[in-house]
Image (cartoon, rainbow, N blue to C red; front, side, top):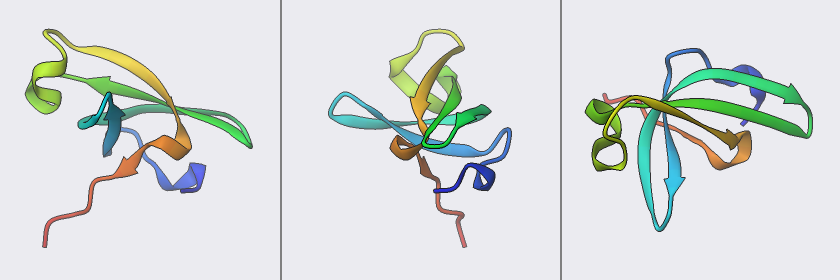
Length: 70
């Protein structure tokens, strides 16, 4: 995925242990090949993994875009 493909507020999936959770893009930064995504995690979207809103930073190549529903 290219750095210009993700937008602020877009829903993505990140790895979480042996599972995956949903979050939203807060920021994308870095210089190729080291590009990172700051991800907002909230109880409403991310489920059991957080008790209150927080952020994590992940390498761009470890996040997946949520497929739009048709």
